[in-house]
Each structure stands twice: as C-alpha cells, then as structure tokens.
Image (cartoon, rainbow, N blue to C red; front, side):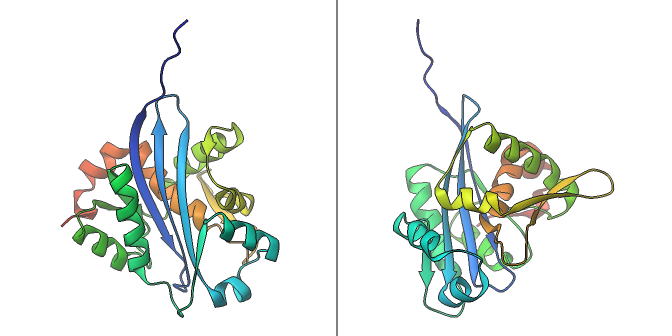
Length: 210
C-alpha cells in the first residue's frame, strides 16, 4: 500500500501588535495537503511588558525563552524591523504568499514589509471577518491538526471565545493580563489562507505592495 506524501499547499503570514507597542507576535502558517497546519511563531516582548503586564510564570518564561519562542527587547518599544527581518528569514526558507495584519498599530510595519517586496493584506478586526478563522483554528487545535510551539499553545490557553448578537465568534482574553497575541497573529494569517481569493482579488485597495 502506497502512502501518499504530504505536501505544502499554501503559505501565509500574519502579525499582531499590542496597542502599547511593547508586545508583538508573528506567524507563518503552512497548510499541508492532509489538512493539517504547521505554524512557525515568534514573539517579541519588552522587559517591562514581560515583568509588569503579562500573566506568565517565571518557569513558563524561561521555557519559552530557551525554546527561542520569544525575544526579550531591551528598548521601550518593539522595533518593527525586528519583525520584518524575521519574515525575510522565513520567506527565504519557504516563500510567503501574503501577510495578513490588523490595521490598528500595524500600518507602519505593513508598509515596511511591502517595501521589502511582501504582499500585505489588511484583515478587518470585526466579528464577521474573524468568525470562520476562529472556529476553524479552534477545531484544528482541538483535533490535534495544528502543529505549533509551546508558547503558541500557551496563547491558545488564554483565549476565551466570545460571540456577537449574530452568533459570529471571535477570540477574547480570559483576563486583561492573559495575552492572546500569538492567536491573533495566527487568525490574521488563517483568515487570509481560508479566503485567499476574496482578500487578494476583491480587496485590492487594501493590499500593500512595493
């Protein structure tokens, strides 16, 4: 019996900035032919955010840091060139088709990425847009079809699914100090992956290219 090889179907990226600009997460989502998704993740956190704002234990911080899941930034804010450099490094390994982003606090990085040759796509952070990728990612995570690192699993554990009056689902935080930054970045990438044609063709005015 021949076992069919698993191949890569699509590669998209996503990033999410905290509104304080001291915490940023970025992901590359690799869709496989067997329906599974491999996620490559990195977060950048300022020292102050790590020790003052984020609900993370010292043991968790050490583990994530040792696994290279996040980088501690010495400056007051996260320099967006750190994220763009990471995306350049990742696309050299596996070409990224497009990068989804939240326009709030994300425009400067999106425009910089576009100047480097990336296609960046604005993903509106409204329940209607986030509903399907949120549902899909939660199912993939519960079904064990989401291949990710320990810190991204920690982000998932901080998520509380909420819904609007029309039943659209979107990710919320269990508390103000429970960060979901990595999940938000992944949802931006996954929204793009699920409906690539709609975002690329129908939303041409929201695409930033060099």
